[in-house]
Length: 438
Image 1 (cartoon, rainbow, N blue to C red):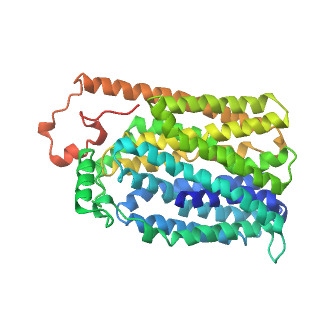
Image 2: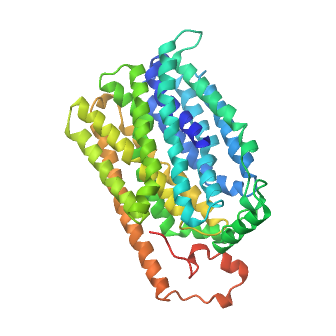
Image 3: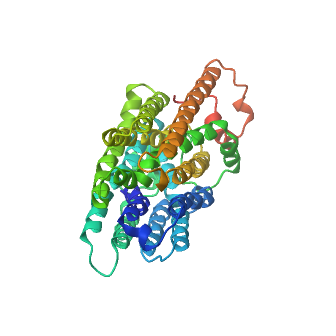
C-alpha cells in the first residue's frame, strides 16, 4: 500500500494539469515538461546513497520517513504560484522520494528466498496500478466538485498528500525490520528463515557496508544491462502515468471524463504487473516474459502511429498500458533474484533505480502539446526504447546462460580454500556454486 500511495503522488501533477493548473500558473512552452521531468533528476542525485543509508537506519523508519516527507512536499505544491516554484517542488519531491523504491526492493529481497522474490515484487509493483485506479476517479471528483477557496488542482495535491501522510504513520506500527528480528515469528521460524538467508548470503540485520560489494556492483556489466532494461521500460511505462489524462483529453473527452477513464488504463497496468510473475513461470523464464511484453508494447505504439482513429488510439493506449509496465515491474525482480551479498543487492538496486529511472525524463519532453492528438514524436521515441529494451533483455539472457554453462563445466578458476570467510561472502553471486535464473 505504501507504493500505491507513491503512485498517487506521482500522478497528481498529470491530473492537476488537466484540472486547470496550466492556466492558473500561466505555464508556457515546456514548463510542464520540466515539472514532470525534474522529478527524475531529484531521484538520480539522491538515490545512489539511499540504500547504503538503509544499512545504518532501521528500514521501518527510513521508508516511513521518506513517505512522510514526500507527502508534505505534495501538499505544499498546492500553494505554488509560478512555474519555477512548481519545478522546485517537483525536484524536492523526487529527492525525498528517491529512497523509497530502491529501499523497498532491497527490503523485500531480505524477507524471501530467491525463488519467491519474483512473485512478491510483482505484487509490490502491481500496487502502483492500484494507486492509479484510485487516482483517476478521485481527481475527477475533485475537478467536478469545484467550490471553496481553492482551485480543483490545489485540492488534488492536498487530498493526495494527506492520504499518504496518514499512511506514513502506520509504517512503524505494521512493519518489522528484518525476519531474524521479527517479533511476530516464533524462534523456530526465525531460525529457519535465517538458515535460508545464510545459504543464499542475504542476511540483512548486519549494518556493515561491504565496500568490496559496492565496487563489485558498480563494475558488474550485468547490473548495467538490467539498468538499460529498466531505463527503456520506464520510458514507455510512464506514458500513461505522466500523459494518460492529456492523451485521453486530446481525443475529445472533457477533463473530468479523461481523469475518470485513467482508472481503466491504470487497471490495465495493474493487471499487467500483477500477471507478470505468473507469465514468467508459464514461459519458464523472466527474460522470455519480458520479451513477450516488449512485443505487445511495440504493437500498441505501432497502432497509435499508424491510425488517426480515436477508437484505435484508445485501444493502443489500453494495450501499451497493459504491457509496458511488465518489464519495469519484472526487471528489478529478475535482478534481485540474481544477486547475492548483504551490500551488493542494495547498491545494484540503487544503480538500476537511479539511472534506469531516468527513462521517463526522455518521455517528459517528447510528448508535446503541439503534437496533439497523435503524439507521433512521443510514440516513436517510446517504440524505439521498447526495441532497445528487447535487445538488452536478449543480450543479458545470453550472458547469464553462458556464465551458468561455465560454472556447470567447472571452468571458473577459483579455489575457495584460499579465501577467508569474509572474502567468500564478498564473492556474492560470483560464487562458483551460484546459478543465475534466466
